[in-house]
Image (cartoon, rainbow, N blue to C red):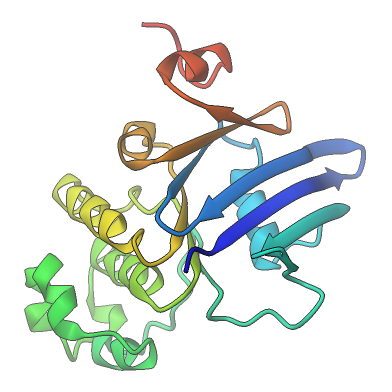
Length: 219
């Protein structure tokens, strides 16, 4: 069954400054939805609004035409990878995989270097290794939708390519919303692409659209 997440009528103001205005975005199973925009345009804020961490001035958020916040939101419906660390450093890889009901053999099929880290605590991993674990947990966990905020920024290029393969695999099971300043990776794997400009989302089709919206410069 295809699941559909829709966000519209979003209004977010800080004092007299409008950050987001009448924003619309759609995510659905089988689709990778890219979200681009220059720094400070509200990409992370929009994800936090969808997840319920920021309460905007106005919003409409629906999963399969059912309002997300009229009843208690189930954690299994949406997973969110923030830019900042969010997992206690004393937990082990083994414990985290168990808590998220995930398979270690699948993790090492993508990242074989973690074979030696099964019982390692997060505090004993490098920053890049911790980020890979965070990405894997959010991306592969059983959920209808997941949102990834800057997943490529703290990992090595060789791991970026592996993460992209994992994202493409997981889109068969869930809707994925992803944003990152490394836009080439986003445009490469996205099936649908939005750009936030002047507080609004614009559905785009190609690089020329990104140029017209001022996100990238003409070559």
